[in-house]
Image (tube, rainbow, N blue to C red; front, side, top):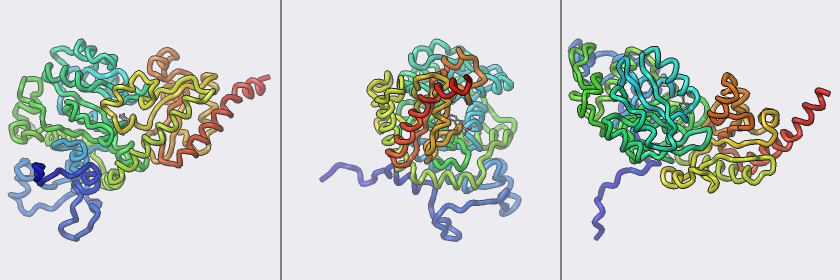
Length: 443
Ligand SMILES: *Cc1c(COP(=O)(O)O)cnc(C)c1O
């Protein structure tokens, strides 16, 4: 007889479809309804009072909580093997909410310098208005995170799979450094999704997502989320008064003491969403939830297509380099096998011979791929960072950010892979001719 326990937790695909999404008890609706309502009726005055005091779970007003949004939060928490999640209007809103719970004026955090460009700008410029300060480090040596920690440091923030550069951060030693310092490790898992990597397994304490990308997957709705592992002990030191000290805005309630392993999530909804207002709409929650149902199928095809395209480009005479951790030539190949055994995502960069002119030539020559600033769509996407997302930077800053003149970024979609490759092939051909024709036109 097998000694296996009778109960086996449901698999990833089952959770992606069923978690948070039981049939509606009143109508029997099988899909989670879009609760397109701003507010919810109280049973009586006592019920209202207990809701406002956070003594009863229930719905008051959709800036704080909404049943459609709650269903999505439960689904994402289940996929990350977390304790709870808060959904927000965008990925950037998720980052704002995460730090709003953790930080006091004058506090600092250490972040990887290889982040989504918008995150670098948010941390550097807008967070300063809250008197929150970031110290950026090169994430390829985990010790750099330790060296940057000060008594005011309240968190470490990194992407596990970062672009440009196809950089994979060694999460295990970084999480050990955070643990020793008594601060949480926050991982932006947008590029990998919980299908390819589960940061909580490697010691992360909070996971943030731009659900705008692969989770939604259709390029149709913006959204973000912060997921809490439930394992961080906020009470171990006095660094997090927002969670461990009585909250004057809630009659002296202490979030960690009252809500335990989902104290962070409760504070994020009851205070950060209430007072900052970056709430996800029920319609977008519905769209993203529908996307998540097919996450595993989509991600498997995204990485299969990306691997094939990366191998094609690596062998192309007009391409000088390809930076994809799924390739043996990548310095991050070994880390990819450890942290992303199912595939290294579907966003990567390559260098086109002929520099800036050829880069522009490429994005203007594609026919199937879309030239735009997004990733994680069913469609294959292309951008030339030096002429778009990074054009405000100096040439030196661009090169440092991995957005030099020859860099082209791809987000490989779900089309027939031969069609993606054929389009890139003809675009490379035309781009190679572009500098000549530009010169000819000038003469
Ligand atoms: C897009 C993105 C963000 C920001 O998310 P929005 O939904 O656009 O606000 C943050 N991190 C990563 C890795 C992203 O790709």
